Length: 240
Image (cartoon, rainbow, N blue to C red; front, side, top):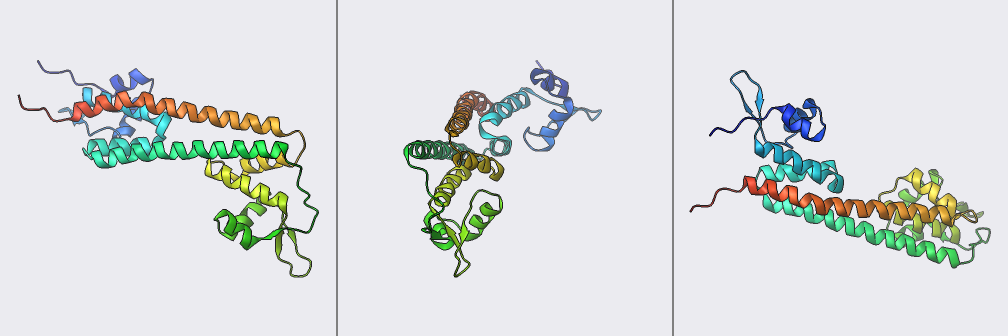
């Protein structure tokens, strides 16, 4: 019995997409190439339908770019690259989770530590701070321009000096950058550190961050079934 060819509308309707979105996914290589009818219309199959299910399931956990790369590798039967992409995404998620724990621990330490006195002359140079953080001095100057860091100038040399409070802010900013936060978001975070009673807002920010990680982890877990079903459809039939 000949299987009925599926139209773009059939694939789109299952997910509430437009037919143009389905065509765009095929053009981007997220779906394998469709056959064409004698009249030139696209004809999809159950394989295409499952490919779309797999991609849409992958996207919330892995992001659009990585999900697309996984599908490209699947179409090429490139298992090595496919599983490398999946493993790297899980490793990145674990690294971000560790970063979140570091930020939370640093925040706990700040809640109990006395406020740094930025008025005292002690401090470190931009080179020393950059070395301490494993960064380039240009990044610290960029953070200063964004309002994240507030060094003062040595009266004799005119060089930047970072007092204890600025060192604290730089360490926190580094954690947050590793967590994927943008400079304007980090500035808001650091501004809260500089005012009394700001810890509640910071804890709320960390709570939202942790919730996003849980959502991604669950999405990654859920997407495995759809991807596995798609890979099974692509597997060559075994001889009897």
